[in-house]
Image (cartoon, rainbow, N blue to C red; front, side, top):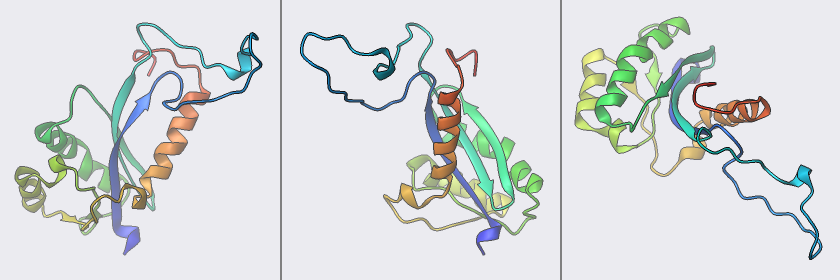
Length: 156
């Protein structure tokens, strides 16, 4: 069964620095060592939102989400990328689509879209983001991006 699941999710990608606090010890009246500091960027650091999917056969489309994602934008992303990703991954028509319980995912119009397209969705427990294996993919992607030299939205 799991080979026929197309896993999906959205994530926020910080473009410069990690979105986490770091603590270091230093003696009073001494400077921070440069290896213990994270530089900042004015006007151009920021973040982007991404939607992506994958299956046991590999990764599907990765889409940059411009602006705020609402139900209409989510359905447009699905319309342009979901079936093409399933086809590229050779899932055929009888695959199961996984999404979490975000309100835009469970909206009446979105669920009607799945019904019209004859796409089966996986029932998902509420408050369970850590169950989705795409979280490991996001972790690896963020690690790779932060390992590269990226300074702005334009560079992404």
